Image (tube, rainbow, N blue to C red; front, side, top):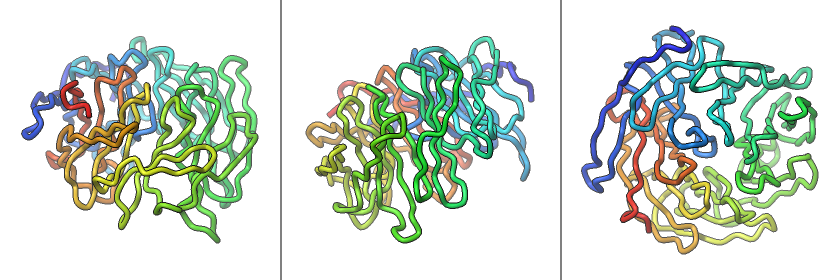
Length: 345
């Protein structure tokens, strides 16, 4: 277990049996391997590498570490070494990865493995889910304490940290809009109104507003629609589909063609990619402008309770690839699928 070690390759190359899409399995070690979430940056800014977690030891107290591999499955290397890596996000401006470690935000270079402390949280708080502005200058993080969601902002240029907002409920799925980075979005769970609510807020903590409270069904998982001042969210059973939610609270149905689950958005806002659930009919490309859908591939994941059995499709910055997790081989591994132009709806 050594930071900086190069494992060469654990890759497997194959094509999807139904669509012909080319897929690379980039992890192969016989333990748990998975990427983060569809609203986290899982590729380096130049789309050359994919970054993910890997547990290299079996056992109840085994640590997960952060690994990077070229998108062709080669040059697999270890970026951290047993430091208790939490949430992570690739930098949008250089070849580095930010990750949380308790009250510390760390930054590690994927090539040199040089590492430094980027920030420390305010006293009594810790880094939870965090998101980075598109210019790479600001980080917004959540910290839930005694049922209250606390947001704090990190200015990476000034090296300052400040609490910006307190929310009367547990905050989740925090994410900064990746294009203009003027807004952040989160879900909440309030004891008197459990689930179903989506909020947005300016990065400085002002103008908090609830933009969705279940008018079209209970939201499942949400992401920003880059460049449109709007979010997209899948719906929970018994409601199929993906909806668009404007910052003014206006809601439209994009498509109700499937029971979608986790939808990730390409950085240019032209395409969504979503897995499906109950039933699992594959992973789909969705055009958010007209609702047209086309099957990309079959993840063939178990889709059970552990998060690493969920595909969570996330786009590369250049919009040419999607990373997903699947336990199709019995253990969860990380896969990168190329998005053929002829399949784009």
